Image (cartoon, rainbow, N blue to C red; front, side, top):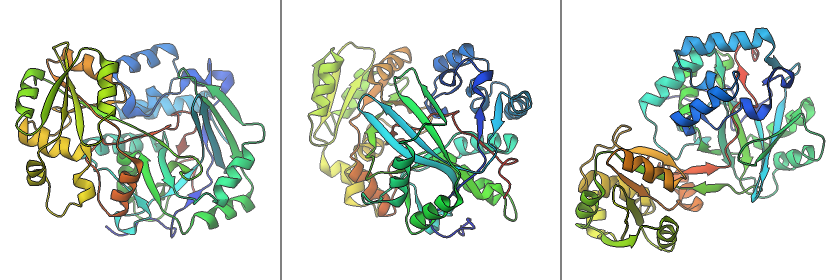
Length: 419
């Protein structure tokens, strides 16, 4: 695929943001949400019930994509959503106990995969891309930013500008139920925009969160002839040297695979140890492992620790041409050896469910589905960066970088961002 951006290098441009009018909603916290792929059915119902204008009605429409488009038009016409008067880049801060991250939200120049400007580290799947493409096409909007990291080497002019702006009164401020404070500032000075553009031009960025949405940006651009607002996509860009990200684990649930069967089959290549029913203690055992390890749970109260995979079987299960660093990833061993070779489970979205962060929730889901929960340690940030820099991708849903941007604080519509 050829490079599809109209700008060389990493580009984050100002745009006229669409934002909630605080006077028209109960609170900004009540109308925002986590990213769409972190919202389960229970949370969706809660967001829908709490506030009639919650952003989930746009990002996860209950009828069809046309319904989301009509809702967006109605909210704009009624003044629930308003359009900022001037194009801006937006400094964005998330702060809480043990959390501080600042970055810049703007219209990201979309590149083809050969450019190596925007580096993915995970594979994508057609279903989520089709879903997000249908939604973006119907709404003519980017409804939530993807999350990118770049290495400013501790002295990025862009990062310094963001910190300077963050010392002034914010455009908006809200605290969400997770006790994180969100603040936003509009940067409208063209001279500052030019300085940021010059600083970013020769850099490249890693996709921390939003692989399917970035692939959708690429598909949307490919679907149009000539330049237009589809040349860009909404993104948050964070200097990882100034604000190192948190990397959390993503657990798996395999419905209809009884944990007793899972443990029995796993013993062909792993050491299996029963570690009792107490989850915090079992998680401590898991975290203490230096090598590849997994915690299994399901219908039984007891949890089981898998360690010391047979290296000959690991090697045989790996794809040709993969690097030694890739082969050492816990998720590579999980998907290639444990799921595919030992459990003989098709590695797709219906047979391998994804649970972000919450081990207890993964166990509950496994028990409801007569299945097995696989609890993982998080990958190392250095390993993910090295794999991406080498042109490889980690197995799907291997990483959960955070803190993720809150959905609903800033939207971008094509009709208000014509260039």
